[in-house]
Length: 310
Image 1 (cartoon, rainbow, N blue to C red):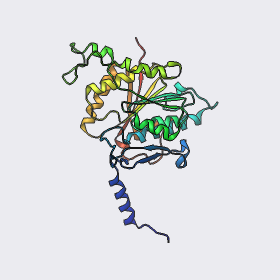
Image 2: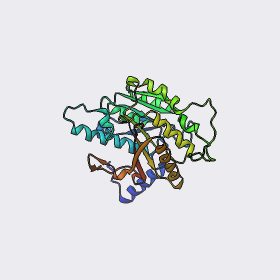
Image 3: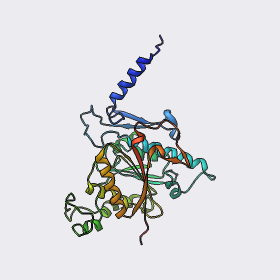
Image 4: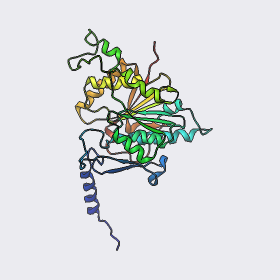
């Protein structure tokens, strides 16, 4: 027998679905899927496993579950790559040029920071990047998802964000960014430069990536954490080659303080860029079409590059 859902039933179903979600995304289910026409549509999704809030392995606020900005980042990479490929005459494209507009080519080398489940990196790999390094301080979830999707061009590494040697050397001097909320770091703690050396050595030609991506990596951290993130990012960027994209979501006043710490640290680390509301992001001079994601109106796409040394 067929069943026709009434308007009230439809509303009730949508309300039930909303209650099932946390931060506007499903953080309970054991399995998730991300689909996009650029990846083959709903018949060929990126599949992810998560240790959701109903799992014994769930750790609140960590990489064991999906976070909403990851979907917005995946959408952007897919949309930008589709537009870039549409404009190509030879069908190949230049990886550095493509990275400047958020697109992926067959020569692209990409790194994802604070990957969690690894959706951004998985999408870059599915789009055909040459090499994708998916990094996190707790990389088990990302490793599992790379294996689930059978991606030979995606590689998972443990990476801890660290502050740069130059920044640590000037702590405590008048006129620097140091304040009481920045703790002294023992000499044995690696610098950002030391932290990224093994990763850079593992990339093709042992050279900086074309594109670095991150989602929900700025939320409610302090100045020291944002300096560590920015310095790690800057240490793997090459002027004129690398473009970085970070998706940020406003979840309250503490988030804006974190974002301010991020931009202050970025400026002193030689990174320049600008934030664009996700809803206003343009692809090839046009605003993206489609329904977007829940709460996209509260998200920013941060685009950064590294200044050449004076």
